[in-house]
Image (cartoon, rainbow over all chains, first blue to last red; front, side):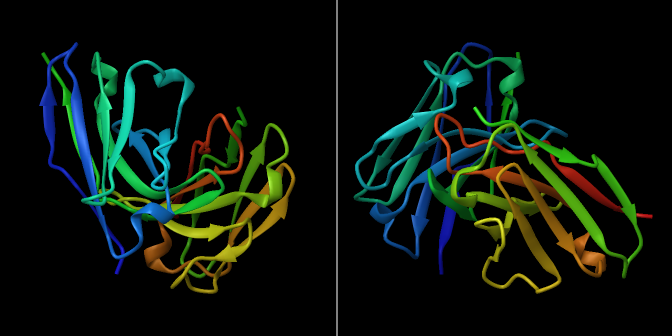
Length: 118
Length: 109
């Protein structure tokens, strides 16, 4: 069965960076993309970007350009999302999901809470 | 970027009633690349509908999606207790952004 297992909760100070991992299993990793979605406390879903599992091509949300980097390690079927220059309003649950451009998000990770606090 | 506007913000209904949720796009959603997700508190979203009207695996047939172009609808024919949740629409066909709507909360009346 398809599973996406994310790394654990993080607490960071403003200005720091965070890197969240998402280990996929149960499907051919290189056949699908991975998207990252975040949800601030009590708010809706915000798409952050997408990375191709096939060739590593990326497409980032405009408001995060320059602060976010998404990568994959096909040898371990793991996707990574790094967010830099963290601000208080980056506090959110971060999800990875199987899917992306032209593909709905049919499986989701359990979410990783990132708290930005001084 | 395509903006998705969901209405109403909150829908107060009783179990057994019919729920009709709307999602309106600021421009046409290509090839009906429109999905609906359900999210319960403390859980990740779950895919319900893709391609505007296709049910995802394991989704009961009381959930149905319709629409094309800029107007889409999610209908729950008879609300079960487990259906009270927040519902999001999403377009996944258009770069630069794959956007979500703001959500509709279906609450028990």
